[in-house]
Image (cartoon, rainbow, N blue to C red; front, top):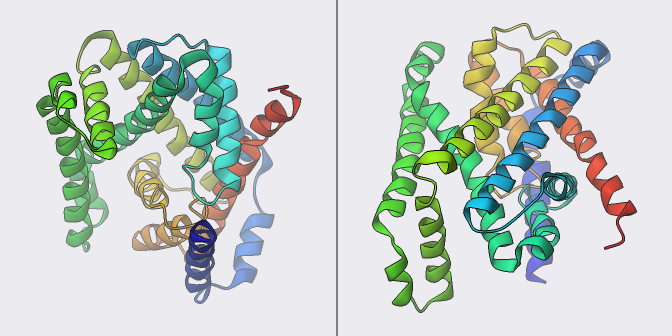
Length: 305
């Protein structure tokens, strides 16, 4: 019953967010924007997003290798795409990771599979925070009338990266010997794993794959914007899209729906993009995620496992 209540709550957050966003929007304008979408841009966006998933799968394989496991790219791609599909149909955008772990359990073992999935997510999240920290001066120019927003971004970016790095520096394998609580032991293990990626090929493998995945997602979003007639500079998307992704990661809605749309309407509205176009763009991106996960559904259906 607790799971049912949680599902209902997340669905309510998504529906409520969409309702609040749509109250001041003429849906006729949104439909007109969607009708005018340029198909070649949509195909290019979907293709580019699929390419990013391959590099994301490669990143997970790198993580598993550093943790002592052996994961071939084809298995990682299958696990990633099946997980991507379930991320769109389960109540949270992290739900597909449990399916991904189930697939990786056979080649890696349960412990390495769980740690690989978590660190793969953490690598992408850390790169997002680093990107926010590096580009923070540009936000001052983009949002000159929103100093509170810029300050909040700074606190989240620098605070998040600092907390993770500090934890990795402080925690060591010896602390696991004195940990008795399973949750505490898991957290200590996570920081011990993070410390293994501090330098050398382990660090480089995470940086270059995460960079491709990060900027690929931004360019995908920009291509969808161009398809809908939102012809902003690419730098504008580079700055705004990561914040939208960050908002969508908050696990209180159904697969990010509602929160993602509210964030898009709010942030694009700050730079003068009308709310109808911003909402249409966010909806199209959500649909793209659904379509992008379809290969995972097909892989799951043809699998005998």
